[in-house]
Figure 1 (tube, rainbow, N blue to C red):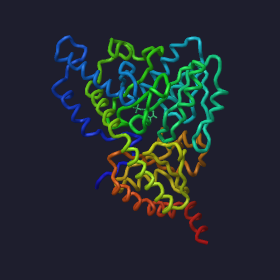
Figure 2 (figure 1 turned 90 degrees about the vertical axis):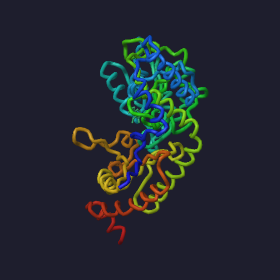
Figure 3 (figure 1 turned 120 degrees about the horizontal axis):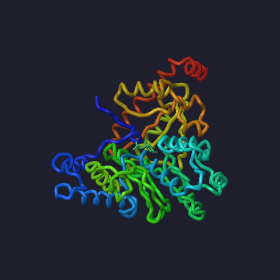
Figure 4 (figure 1 turned 45 degrees about the vertical axis):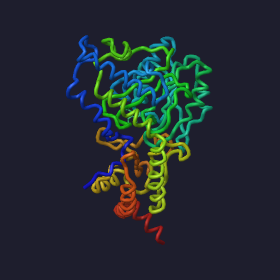
Length: 392
Ligand code: PLP
């Protein structure tokens, strides 16, 4: 059975071109880039080439890129750097729909005495800029708002936000882990101070990420030790993965325009077909400002996990709107913040596509899902009741 992988916001397949580029640095060239000898020292150049490729994708300068181990580390580093830069300030603004890499780090800081404002979103997951303006205080040290949401794909109005913050000289960090490689990110136009990205979301390996820090922004390292990354992030570099990230950024940059059109077409086909073929389905999020590869659908009167298990039997991979933590199914904090009804949260499924998905795969999924939903609704007392009332 072939796998149909529609869970690309969770992680992506490593591009074959990326693997090719990495292999020599896993096999022959295993030196330490900090070594004096040529065998190790030559790797320094390859790291700098990867830095240039990463910067080019973001329209940034190479010296503004710091390699890290993942998106989470980049997010934690950005927030901690802001905290260290303004020791007399105690207030941070973020949103209620951030990834745990930001959300839980902010909660951690709240326990240490920082005041955190979690901005609300409306039913479509949109922020009200007036709420941000009202939340700003005299000692606000940082605003951290994601570029694009991992669950529903919403893209936030960062240009508008950064103008407001620039005027007030408040640091602005964005978690762009889901945006980089999927939509154009132009840091010449967008005046954010810091931006996080993660390799495994754009067809590079897991275990590598980067933090962009705009020239002139105060910066304090989070991981302290050796002199790597010009003292901004200690630890012997993950050379092969950094090279892989550079290659993945180059691929993304060369193919972005075509991929956006391709992914949007497949995503829209999947979405409109399922809305037509299934009853009681709703789209979660902002259909006018979303990632081209993502759709979050709520199928009423069925459990998302039951849908996932049935899809799994066909080799189809997707995600549900609940997170399994300590044995219980926690409804998604993103969908809760958007006021999605409880029953709809439990029946929500996220499909996230990549350049490797084909039209045939999407057709197969469209063929299979309506039957699964009907079958599961007949099994659930609530769904059965609803179906019989509809028949009458
Ligand atoms: N931020 C967002 C929006 C994400 O979607 C993720 C991963 O799902 C992360 C941060 C964390 O990235 P990483 O898995 O590289 O730590």
